Structures are given as C-alpha cells and as structure tokens.
Image (cartoon, rainbow, N blue to C red; front, side):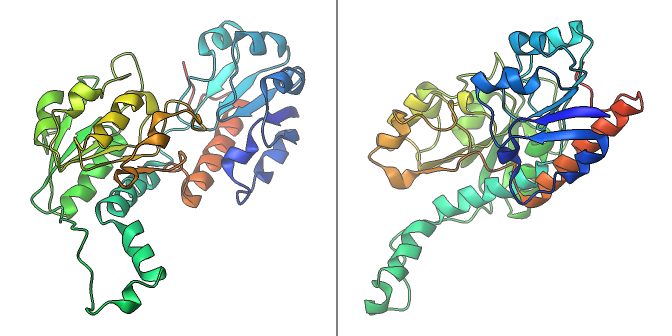
Length: 319
C-alpha cells in the first residue's frame, strides 16, 4: 500500500470524487500547497499528484520514498522530469481529456465578445429595453462566420476540433504549424504572417516553447484585419500582453478572448486590466479545460495510470 499526497485538489474541483485513489493506500488531500509546505507534505510519500505545484530537483531530492509523480494535466513544465528519471521515479501525465471542453470554450468566448452579449444582456436588465419604442436593438453589429476565414495556430487535436466546428458554421479554415510537423490535406497551410493578414478569427492552440513564446507581438497584430478577433486558449506567454493592450486601445483589432495569461492568477499590474476599450477584451480564468466531463475523465485517467504502475506496466509515461 502506498502513501499518496494530492497537492492541489482545489484545482480539480469540489464536485469531483477522488475516493478512487483510496484503494491504493493512505491518501492525504490538500486543497493547495505552498512552496513552504511542499517539503513536509512530500518527504515520506510514495505517490504525488500535482496539477500546477512545482516539483523541482530540490523538492524531489528530499522526497526519499517517492516512486511515482502523477501530473493531473497534459503540460509537464512544473516537474523536473530529467532529475526524476535519474532517481528512477516514474512520471505520468494525461493528454486529450479536455479537447472537447477547450473547443467548446473557444467558441463560447468568441460569441460572447463578437455578439456583444454583455451589452445586450445589460440593456435588457437595466430597463432600457422596456422603454424602447421598437422590438429590437441593433446598435452593436455582429457578423456571421459563414464565408469568413478562421486561422488556427497549432493544428493539434484541439486545433483540429476547432477547425471542424468552424467549418460547420461555414468558415474557411487555414492553419499555421508552429512545429512544422502537423499537416492536413483538409486545410490550407499558411505562414504566420499570411494567416494573420487574411483571417477574420485567429485562434491559438499550440504548445508554449522557444518557438512560440512571444509569437504574437504588436508587429504581428498590426498585420491583422481591424475587424478580426484574436483568441488564446493555449498558453499566456504566446501573446505579448503589453503589446495586446496597446493594440486594443488603438483599435488595431476588433477584440481579443483570452483564457490563459503570462502569470496566473493575473498580476494586479497587468496592463490588460487597465485598457480603455474594455468591451474589446474577454478574459476567463484558465477554465477552458475544466468542463465537468473533462475533469471526470482526467481523474479516471490518473487512476488508470496508478493502476498500471502498481502492475509494473507503463501507461502515459513521460520519458
């Protein structure tokens, strides 16, 4: 039987049942774990579950009994996987669990902003509509996706999911592969500058790495149509946030939808919080991945990862 520590259970949601892990041994569940707390909480455990808590060399070196690290996410940036390998500690992650959730949230963000839903909801609820001489209000114009161009940066599983839905609305899909490896016979591949210049909607679904960090700068945004929307459902550092704040206040694009930020939670001094054109920006707190169904699937996958480890099998190992 194993000693198991779940370091940031609050990130998984209070509505998710974590009792499936009890069959593996003694489980200690912590809502959050600070840097100061992590050493005590991991020093004698066999298995650690972490979503975003950092397990670097210092932490791992002091966890003398550690045998398995289960990352309750796809990204592995928060774990020193090289040192874990040196220590013969298995590391697993989960991929593909949130694809449908991220795709759905991508369109939810776009429609909320592009259709001015906040404005129209407030128009009704503040009493203006009840005093209107006509049955409608078309003071905020919105457009259909049909015959528009949707540019996707990163045509992985999520990017392909977004492409499929965009096509169902009648949009033409083009894409830019940040790695150069992803190809598709269904959509036209473009270089980044051309994609930005021709697209009515640009959505980002690529990983964060040396090629994609600071990929979208003010210079790149200036290439976009003034009527275009920019969506980031990938990683915050892909877009230069200071440059985006300038672009929105200078009306260089119609709007931006962000589910991810350079620093999370958002820094109080983030320039995006101080823009004048607030109606041009929607920010959600990194929730695109987190539908109920996605989180259930995530926990089921982690459970299977531990089961495989117990049996001496390899499953979703990070090598």
